[in-house]
Image (cartoon, rainbow, N blue to C red; front, side):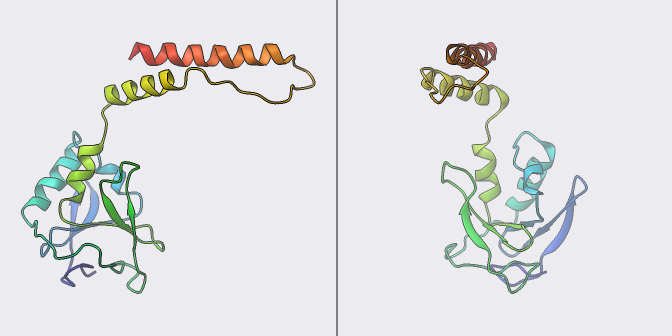
Length: 167
């Protein structure tokens, strides 16, 4: 396989028994379908080890806007998209095989966006507080009184709010 940016050979390495393909010419990495999830947590040894390994090859590229072909599906142009709704890290994804190409530094940026469990709980709590006054309307079910249904929905939100306050 060839690096989509520099056309140099990609080197296959195993990080915690997970194969990845590294470009020593530019510091990019190709991850097979569904492999990225195993490296996105910065506190995980596997993710930390890969970032550390990639840092030694980090090279600034002229333009990341240039579309690249997939190293596996050589004639398929990879789609450039944002990894998260925060629109911070753009990744290249193959529509054919689902592989991901990360340019130099993108894995580290991606890891910096990941929330730990406490931060996720606080975010859930804030979202629940923001949407506390949700009112669900619709036609009553033939076997249920509408006022009983709305009580159930209110009870659900009370339970959800209580659970998020525990964390």
